[in-house]
Image (tube, rainbow, N blue to C red; front, side, top):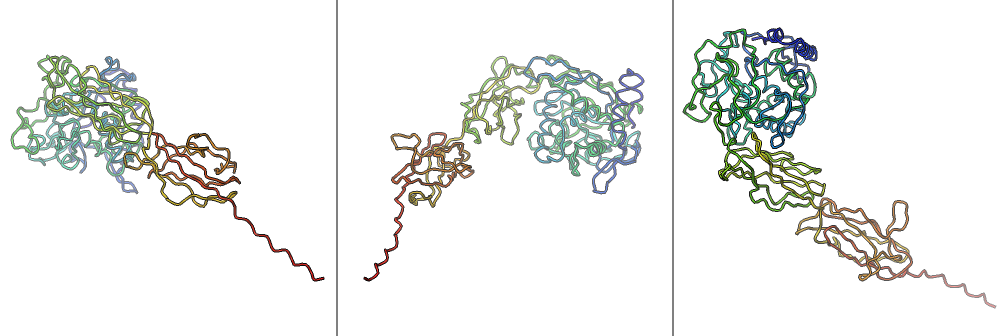
Amino acid sequence: MAAQFGRRLRAGAATTAAAALAVAALSASQAPGVTVDDSGRRTAGDAQSTPDADPPAESATGNSPYYTDLPPLNTPSPTPTIGSPAARGAAEAGIPASVLDAYKQAAASLRASKPGCNLPWELLAAIGKVESGQAQGGRVNSAGDTLTPILGPQLNGNGFANISDTDGGVYDGDSSYDRAVGPMQFIPSTWSWAGRDGNGDGEKNPNNIYDAALAAGHYLCRYGWDLSTETDLSSAILSYNNSQDYLNLVLSWLEYYRKGTHEVPDGTGTLPRDRSDAGNGGASTSPSPKPPRTPGTAGPSPKPPANEGGGSTSPSPKPPSESPSDPNTPETPTDTVDRLEDAGTADLTAMAGDTFIQKISTRAETEDGEAVGKVRIRFTITGDTDATFTGGENVATVATNASGVAVAPALKAGEKTGDFTVRATVVGRTVGAVNYTATVTERVASALTRTSATALTCPAGGEFAEQVEVKATYRGEAADKVAATATLIKSVLDPTENDKGPYFKDANGKTVRTLTGLKTDGNGLLKLPKLYADDTTGTFLLRIDTAGGATLTVMLTVEKAAATSSPSPSASPSA
């Protein structure tokens, strides 16, 4: 099953050969097998992959065949995404919109659940390119399901690994031998424990790009691997398909995608041509399998698979036309979307740190204004803001309902105030975007109260025994991180700074009667520094103002210092 790099290199240009050699040199220190180091983690070892041997116990693909097309030598230019002017880059750099979305969502999920793995979405793209040509050029529907199942050849030991049926044909439609399934080419025995639900429909379907991408991410992040290191990255890739040629090829696509890529409409991605099983005639000798059944259902799929990821005897399928009218490309709901409209989104305003009460609603419509259900709408936060969607991401993808409406997750305001934009686009189709303006206002308080009822008194020239502490609230809840100012004022009618009476001290011990830059703590509390009194007696006022208009005036009393009694004069001596 060794990859046919020699065949491609002899037929290609000398520059392509140089590129392959350069990539191989990068990983030359990594042996092709998988062993265990002193820490118990999988690392590259000395074992070579053999076509007629059983695969490693945890191989994702069962060492099934894969596409061997090399990336072009020219660096792709990053270009705008769907909803912007047409991309102008190398065709190979274009990744179908739903497929790209699935990779990015999976990587974002792993950043949250396994941050130490450092999984780049470009690695999923590289493996997806090699395994299935990005789901056969992005031939998926709005939910991410492939339009036809993607199957590898029978793993019957005839030029491939020998893996007897493990799933009763549920996933691969073959009750004799296993086959790699779906855009990420999982064998059924691996999918049974590695499968994930990436699109939230309650199913784990290897022929769904969202499910498969998330499963691949978790598979690559097991054993505590850190994919930002060369050793762990190589180990993870080799565990997916145990071949040094496979490792070199995936690394080359990883580097290519890291230099720039763009999304293209679903179904228009570039299809690969060459596969590693070309030397075996490109096919299994066994008859075609029955169509796979959807897990949890009893009946077969409506029609058998039209192409196989690694074992079809027919030539590679013709790339589908960009026109929905092409008879080779079934029309999907996405193809019928003519425009996006605001679906009655209310004014988007929230205080810093709060969750927006209002949610963004977008409606997908046909040219005649009819609703389009089951299409994916991507919501992207742009602008100078630290606001996010619930969960901490700045991108969210939501499918429209039967009324054609997609409701974005709730927005969470950050600490930066001002306006930002949320942009709604259709995944897999170029139509005008809908932009929503959201505003983050500063934190405010609606009320201030003292936390103590003790009268604040002090003798002239002394210091107040108790520090002033107040609590800020907003709509009855503690108002945290609210800006405040404290000033010793002349009177209620004259709120200018007093020039006598109580005072604070700065860091140098100098007298100050106005404090700025104050903020309440996480419980809405603000404790002022110690107050001192000069020799002026009487009643004085301390005013505390907060953002939002909440104000509290505190009375301070400075009393005359107690007189010091002098000793009685000595009696005069008797005459």
